[in-house]
Length: 83
Image 1 (cartoon, rainbow, N blue to C red):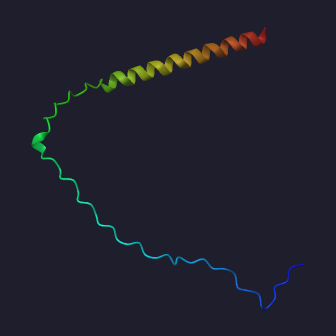
Image 2: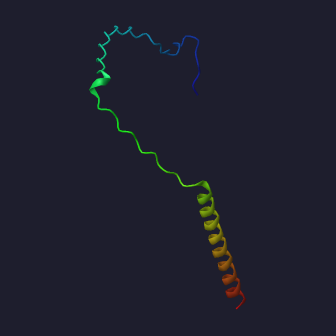
């Protein structure tokens, strides 16, 4: 059994007694080149987005095809189970 005696040493306490770092001189920022040196940017072509009605029609058709496929699979499995 370990007993704590009255004359035991106090626990070690860690502190941040590190010397302050010497300030480093900041390097001079690189001079920014003048904008005249850059080539003029080409005008970007605007993408022609499809009409939202076309996208909605495509999504509805896809969902309908998936639903009919699932229904057909369900009927096929039910027919197989009853055999």
